[in-house]
Image (spheres, rainbow, N blue to C red):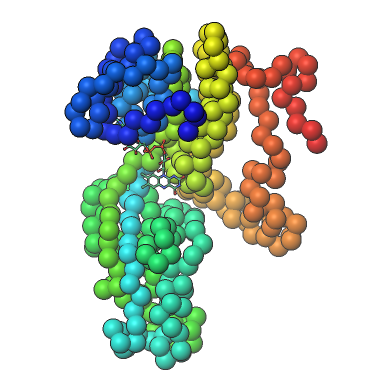
Length: 336
Ligand SMILES: Cc1cc2nc3c(=O)[nH]c(=O)nc-3n(C[C@H](O)[C@H](O)[C@H](O)COP(=O)(O)OP(=O)(O)OC[C@H]3O[C@@H](n4cnc5c(N)ncnc54)[C@H](O)[C@@H]3O)c2cc1C
């Protein structure tokens, strides 16, 4: 936290009179308090209390990607997000589980069916992601899949549909182990902690700051959360904001409107909405898959694939008013 900042942990209600120096808020216990602050940062997530209660009436809107220059394409889909807690089977609990005959241990079985790396399942029928999360000893696993236009998100979150969609991924062909029958991970070793639909969209506010009120993280923009875009963007917002606030909070500094608009112009240039991984156009998929297949044959290209956008070096920006460089004097160029 920047020295001198106050973290108002929720739920808080902020009085709309926040344009003055005094900020009135009701804390979680219902007590009314006044705080004197130069700036208010609404880092209150997608539901965006600060944005809705205060900034939306003043013209700040969370707009769809298609209305924003910062996104390459629109994205508006429902996904089901499932969290499972896994209790690996043991020879005692599941004596007939076929892998015991091949000397697999319960831990090895868990690792086989729920690998530790995060996976993007570029299945054109149903793009999905899955991977472990939380503490290793808790053995938590998440699976998220897209709900098609003709399907109902709530129905798709139910046990019957989960079986249809998720279980093929935890059923291994028997031939992989030299066994005659396919092997399904035992259903009674899976506890569903949460299964519900979420709207994943690419949206961004037209402005992320108005006066001395600033929106940061999901309250300013939401992405389909592929490639860590959700949380990483929030961290980038905060780190790009921190030094600017150090300037804005200097005694007598008044030009915060420019500095804050420069901040969100810069941040909006870093968005990418993950469309590469959720492509369903068969022609584009065909080229994507073959392109990636060829690249992974060339060792130097594998490294580049792993680097992702980092292989292009530091991010360079197109100048916009309020940005902290002078393009006329070569500012904004990266050294090779
Ligand atoms: C199902 C799902 C899967 C996701 N998977 C990924 C992923 O794999 N990778 C990724 O990078 N991102 C993922 N995301 C997105 C990621 O969760 C968000 O981008 C990220 O949490 C945004 O951080 P934030 O701090 O802006 O908002 P949040 O994490 O939403 O935090 C906002 C905080 O503000 C608090 N708050 C709200 N109102 C008030 C109030 N009035 N007063 C005080 N406090 C308040 C809330 O309680 C909350 O603690 C996923 C999201 C969902 C829904």
